[in-house]
Length: 362
Image (tube, rainbow, N blue to C red):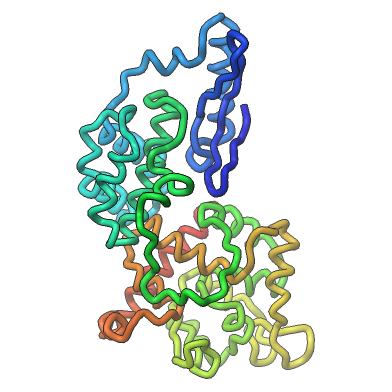
């Protein structure tokens, strides 16, 4: 058994020789299949070989269900148990139900690229919905391989080297295409990382945790002043002169962030003080804390992208709300619509959901 890694795609595969030829059987995505389950499946294949049978016969004997049946099984067995918010679960069911209606009656082993495109093209202008749907179709089809309902091979819903060549590239609304891009930790890895981070002592580790929970910029976090924090209201108000946009930004604080602030000592005016008296923490401290934990492929600032990707892939919250939470400009009309009395409430709900997700392994 081997792990096959191709860009963001990571899959378990079983490679064996039979009749002087090499064969490969897919076991499934590392995102959906644990190492223990992959080893169990590989053991099944080895038993078939030891008894003189081709492991592919395990798949031939299975009658493939429809995509709708496979999607329902995936939600019930894999996705559902890991989803803590009912709204997210409803969105999963809606995207794989209504939005994937054309796929649902098709046998899961007969779905090809054209079938997937037939579903995605009509909604491609609704970028976030289309992105979520494509990812979920890919996961259901990977699940079908694990269950023996599809032959191993290229996933027709895969993006890189596949649909990326068939669908037009679209820029996110409000996205600054000239902005610097930071290496981001995949959002699926964030809960396990946060569990390790919470176990660490140190002011830099708490600053990093606070930055992740609030999806704030590193500079905004290390420059935080106790005057900006209202612990009782669960609100952090960053003045305009400290914001990249030169506009005041209010950050709703979720329960873990509030509890963490209550536990910090008040040494001077800085929430996260530096080593020198009356000085704020150096930018490099957060990166050093990350590297000390063995994380080399992402940066503190990159967790903002992790947050945005999580919103797009795993929730039903609108893209604009995520952008507002990141203090990005999304257009005056949208801003006015969201800030007409309930903007902070909506963003508080989103940040509470993000904190719950981050604490999933704790």
